Amino acid sequence: MSTTVPPKPPKIVIVGAGSRIFAARTVADLYLSSDLRGAELVLVDISEEALERTWAFVQQLQEHMPDRLRLSRTTDQREALAGADFVVTSIAINRMDLWRQDYLEPLRLGFHHCYGENGGPGAVFHTLRNLTPMVSIARDMEELCPDAWILNFTNPENRICLALNRHSSIKTVGLCGGVDLSTLGRFSEFLDIPRERMTAKVGGVNHFNWMLEFWDKETGEDLFPQLRARVEEIGPPKGFEMCCALWDRFGVFPTTGDSHVGEYLSYGSEYFTKGYDYDHFLDQHRTVETRLGPYVDGSKPISDWVRPPSDADELSFGRTLAIEVMEHLHLRKKGRLLSVIVPNQGAIDNLPNDSIVETAGLFADGSVTGERIGALPLAIASMVRREQDIQELVVAAWAESSRDLALQALLLDPNVDSVQRAEALLDRMLTLQAEYLPPLE
Image 1 (spheres, one colour):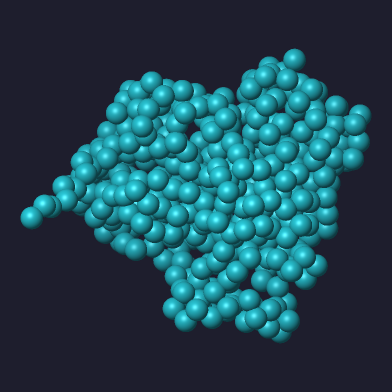
Image 2: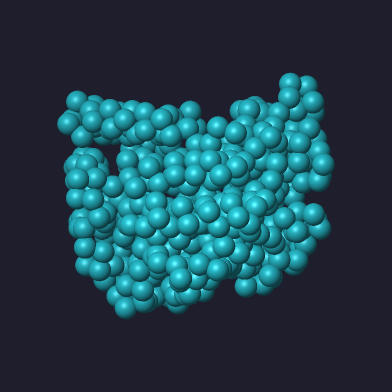
């Protein structure tokens, strides 16, 4: 009788491990995974101070469950990547200061965009900043771990994944909790249905993803009528006012909330005008440090942290999607996860086959493909294709060091209504962020 030999525990590298929230939850979830038990985990960050902060927290986890993972840390990316099986990337460059510029500078020139992170004129510069370090990681992987996967959380996700697919041979899947946590998590409270019972059929690009079907996994019930009745009774969920208005007009529900969806639309600022709440974000980071401190110094038992996360926990992202993806790929499991960012390859009929889309991920034999959903409605596909064209131009601008292509990306954006002001914005940002942006000629 033949038996299946389990695969060797993987080597997992987290690049950007100095992140306060992401790293703490991700590593804790790794300790909880029986499928990944015995894995080698390497934490990497260019900031030694941030890395040491995470390391102090992880040491408490290791003392609590010493037989689960083999740990190391380094600021040397190449040292970490040698022989890796999975590389989880979540990086940002001077995040708050530059994000403020991405948002405020277009506003000063009269472009009424919202948020400035993943779409709109600000996202051109966010993309250009992050492509160089992300492609550098992929280049090192081609040499040091060519069969490994990148599991990317770095924004703007769709654009980063497009560049990695265009300019490296490394297998890449983008991961985001926007559909599951931001949307179904909000609907769970709104409809009083446990989130784990909900699922959906979605298609589009990251943060501009459209829900075609929505149902209860236990009963098979279509949940859209219940959602519609609740909206008519008490109004839209907070932060989904524009999403519900688009649902009324187009018959399809856009996920991830008004702040993200509005980035891709000329009328997004009708509903969302405040941009990111930077001060709240910084306060949240300080809160995280305060809450993590007692676990690091031992005044609170680390066992309180190593538990299945609660939807009510503001520091929890649910069970980290990266862990589920690694389990499926490493053990060659079959399964469906609600959303992944992957090459289209026929998943959505009326989007370019070589474009990057976000839809449900189907896992089998150590790989993942997008779930086939057929065609998006014409109006939805038209909006998504325009965003994909902008993404192609931005990535090409980076690859070719082309100012003209960057300007074309700006001029194609629905939030941009002036050639002269678009040129002024490009010149202003290339000067203001010269230390961080690639030279464009």
